[in-house]
Image (cartoon, rainbow, N blue to C red; front, top):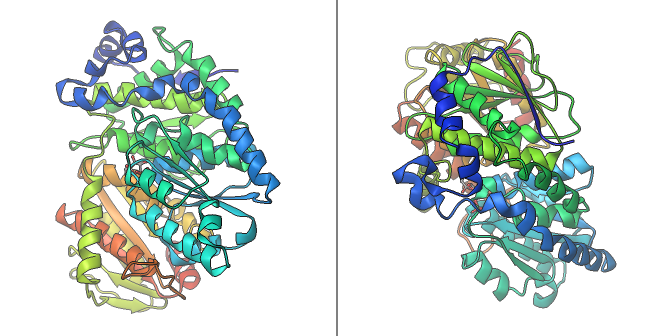
Length: 532
Ligand SMILES: O=P(O)(O)OC[C@H]1O[C@](O)(CO)[C@@H](O)[C@@H]1O
């Protein structure tokens, strides 16, 4: 079975067909024509289309990874922890969840979540995965694991042997990996950007070491690759549908699983679509929902895409089926195609760096002092930017009123984004807030764990249309964890990332509600109660 596309109730405007079919986009994309996205994108595109070749060029990795896994297993190292974020962790996480093999993914700075990953060190191997090699989340985790292994009594050589590195050639991490004596440093194809790296060493190394069949994944993709130059191929049709949605006022792409055997695909597709299209004041907002009939799954400004199922009548809706390897390649292709119609460069992320710079500044200067406007139960309320000016916040229903004020501030055709700087396992209940909020509004509601979301929808939040309203959640930290050789711990880093994100949103005059949970479980319960 390969990638298949079905669609119902969507009109494709003639100019979209012409721009994609008439211009022979399918064949030109497969030929890696960098001019497809206009002169401004040409330079970047000329070094970012290597993902089209990966079903073939990644093949030699399969045997080497099987050997390495056997070697690790022989030494009793059967627990794989992946330190990486965004494109460097979401694909292997989907692969492993789908295959049912254990992979501990650490894509956070939450001190509780990082500490929880540092168990069973005697059987742990750590994959450090970062394309740029300088990402603060991954670098901090590297330092913490080195320290933890040292505390467990390992010497320098033994510690090096516990790390496998995946990065681009010439990156600072390539150098660090060599200097620390990492067991192996995999240098990935530098002509593939992070969001498009699912079938490169970034997707394959952690997944294969955890026990997934990555050879099968490449075969699934290769089968689709054979058809990608054909006019009307299924991946092109998906790109046409997303583009047609955009052109007809549906600039949200709702992603729902239709009972496929794939687990967590929406989170990977979200970073691909948001990071590739959300810039220059436009974009497609991916909205990952719990099921095709979840609150907010259908809306007048959204195209519902069912992954692994049929389109939902009466539409407009799309269904895409096929195995995971084909889904990865098909969505990358479709997103690149949509970028052409939107007029965006699918391969850059111009607005991500701003929050990173804000974070660095805040780490240098110390955290901002922002007294809460009110504390209600386990929730401290703040609204930088003035959202709650003139709003009374009584103890009995102040949280409800604050949430109502935020929902009322979502502009027409806008969206509400929840960014939870929490532990996505221990504080998993916060994930229920998406549906709970969506029941109270006709607007799209997205939910993202942060700081992971900075590398996914974060680009869209800052670079896309200014139609978002934002709910940021932070939580009390019971015990901080130092970041070795840095003047701050994970709690300070996480708080600085959250504050840096708030600054980037306030500068754009976006409505923002910041709720700090002084007790994470109680505060989450309070929010869900407030939403009924
Ligand atoms: O692999 P890196 O360099 O750590 O980057 C992580 C992610 O950050 C981004 O560069 C943008 O936030 C993504 O494209 C990428 O997947």
